[in-house]
Image 1 (cartoon, rainbow, N blue to C red):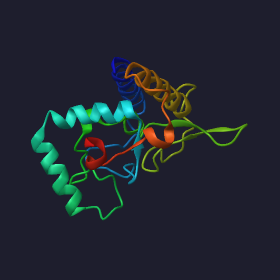
Image 2 (image 1 turned 120 degrees about the horizontal axis):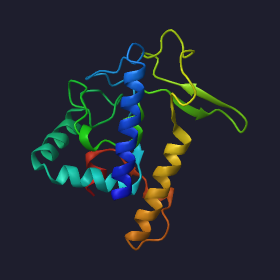
Image 3 (image 1 turned 90 degrees about the vertical axis):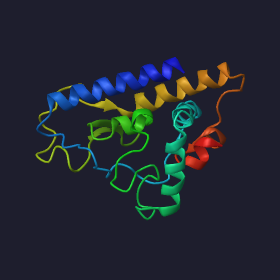
Image 4 (image 1 turned 135 degrees about the vertical axis):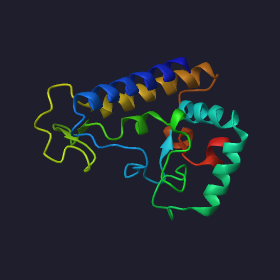
Amino acid sequence: MREYLNLQEKVDAEFERLSTKHHSEINCSSGCHDCCAPELSVTRVEADQIKRFLLDDPALVVSLKQLATQDPHRGTRCTLLNEEGLCSIYEARPVVCRSHGAPVLVQIDEKREGIDACPKNFKRGMNMLEVGDWINIETLNTMTALIDWRYALDEGREKPDPEIDRVSLTVEALLS
């Protein structure tokens, strides 16, 4: 679990570095939830970290269950967003959510990579980015998968099976 928390800290630090360096281009703000897609899933280590966070706050669990019933975003956003579009688990949000808004390096196909970012950010283009002014999403995914693999072994399980070890980012799935 410590490895996962270290990864969260590194992603947060990198996002902060990029936000500071490109403050005029990154328009992320509290309440913006364009990146908060529905039907996301997380690895077991991420799910267990979020579950610990939830179990430390029983009132939040009750609130999230009511929120799921109300579905204020009508299935168009993550079910953990409150009515105002704020993340209810912000302190414990998964690694992928911590990278949202930053420029990310993505694999387009076997031979090509590209830089992507939220359409609200870098409206003048991304030409001002210098080498390394992005989060490599493939590296981030690989690190998360390796940490999850180690977590599975530490828990006495075989290597994780992505087909069954991914957990839906809903309060019901996280608490089961």
